[in-house]
Image 1 (cartoon, one colour):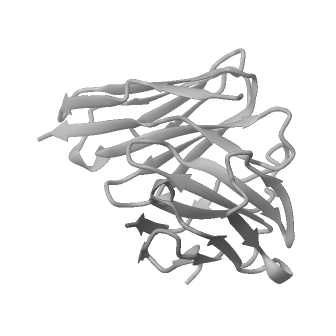
Image 2 (cartoon, chains in turn green, cyan):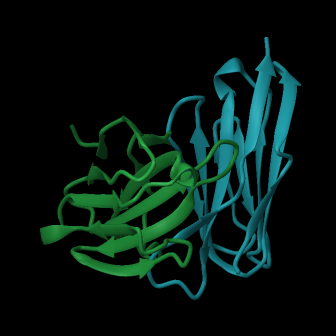
Length: 119
Length: 113
């Protein structure tokens, strides 16, 4: 499979529990992004990795959120002490650097997402 | 903060009618990308525009990037039921060195057969 894989597809958790999501990007892509999407809204940026380095993190991301990308391959997103407001679709996307003349970045390839419901 | 606004939020058309969605950024963009999300699906990359005033076509879809690189539009000619979905524009801010895209709220297109 050459797409972006996310696991699990759905997660229902009780408020206060910790959850962890996994993303496997396209292997040759060095850029990996996490976004969050709620109903009727566009994806909202959470964090960015270039290879294994986390280079940007949204100010909207509280200390309860942490992400890793060990060895620059798969990535995990952990939410500690979940709240009902965390309920959303969590999308992972990867992209690479274009080898064409003036296009330094290709479009994102999104995974199918993890739908989190906090009850 | 940087914002990307899209209008309209919803559009219902009869099959065969045209459709246009507009995107405006609060800041000058390095490039703009368009994505389509089918109901229950995830966003899928359609196209990227880089140059000021650029126009690109994909079959019945026409994409434009404004001269000031702050606005863009997507026009669909003679809509079909397969065009149903939400169309997002996403801007790459000129000062960004991470490739972070700022997404609009999307325009949801419904096509009546």
